[in-house]
Image 1 (cartoon, rainbow, N blue to C red):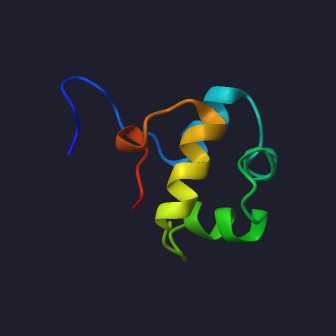
Image 2: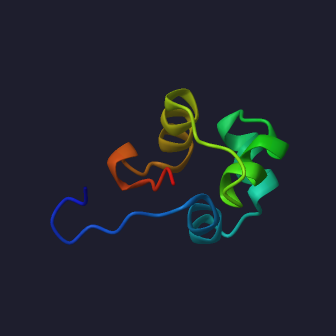
Length: 68
């Protein structure tokens, strides 16, 4: 569920917002790049651990990261 007018960002949007590749985002978040690519393409699901790591690496609230 979204909070107010805040928009959820998927992994591709997070990387684009930071002007980096998915591979660079994965490295910054200490997540396997292959796994993050699978998440971004919908072939794998994001774990709670991935969500926390992405949040810390990007400064985006976990509530604003799309896990689908």
